[in-house]
Length: 287
Image 1 (cartoon, rainbow, N blue to C red):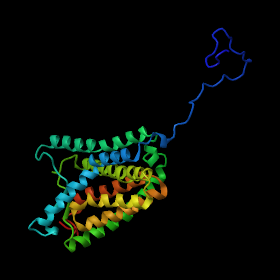
Image 2 (cartoon, rainbow, N blue to C red; image 1 turned 90 degrees about the horizontal axis):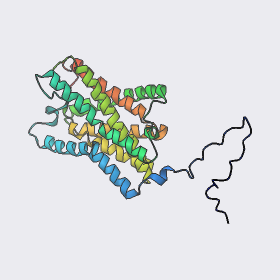
Image 3 (tube, rainbow, N blue to C red; image 1 turned 45 degrees about the horizontal axis):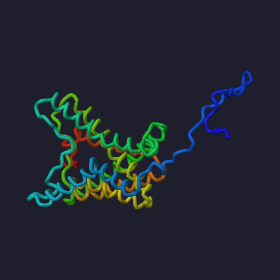
Image 4 (cartoon, rainbow, N blue to C red; image 1 turned 90 degrees about the vertical axis):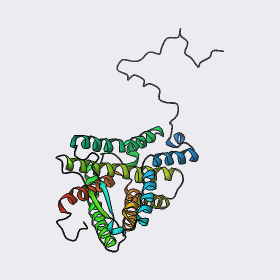
């Protein structure tokens, strides 16, 4: 009996009429689906913990320790300051600039890791909407979110500061170098990309794959966001908790993280750059 698994080398190929299309190369035997590439729940859980330990989970632990220091300090909470962007080499502007750029670039390493892990499971950054396919939607919706969250966050900060529940936030203590504004914008962009890609896009996506209900995942994401802002005080803890719920709702509704990146970046640019020109010149801003 002839084995037809392999073609007979002496058998001529079937003739093809002139102009007939060439036969296409055979495709894969079967399509590998995303669920076939996902590790089991235990490994997926460890993946999430490792990503958070290298990024905002570690920031949350640091913020809790810092908050304990705030509570045990002799001064009231409002009399203490929280500096967001500080000089790293005072009096040496080029060295300081090098450190600032270094901190921005390497802080984004966990984002690169997340994109890699998504590709490992047959997905990509597009899976969580971290792309530029819808620039107009991402821009205008991001600006609307920035206005909503930014104004609300400012009110929460002012009221909680008056009540002594929030530290005085100093967005920047840079030395007035020619590159200050550039660094402040890059820091704002870094915050937007790092936080929204990991705490919203990646975390909600992976928790859904583990079987979490959508709003349980959003709540977990929001609580994490609140905790890594705890070093600023109780008021900003709850302000960021609300921000996380709003951003989580938006992601569940539209499945895109890019508008959240735009919104967060705009909020921080206004806060960082605006503070340089406004704090000390406007009476109702804490100084």
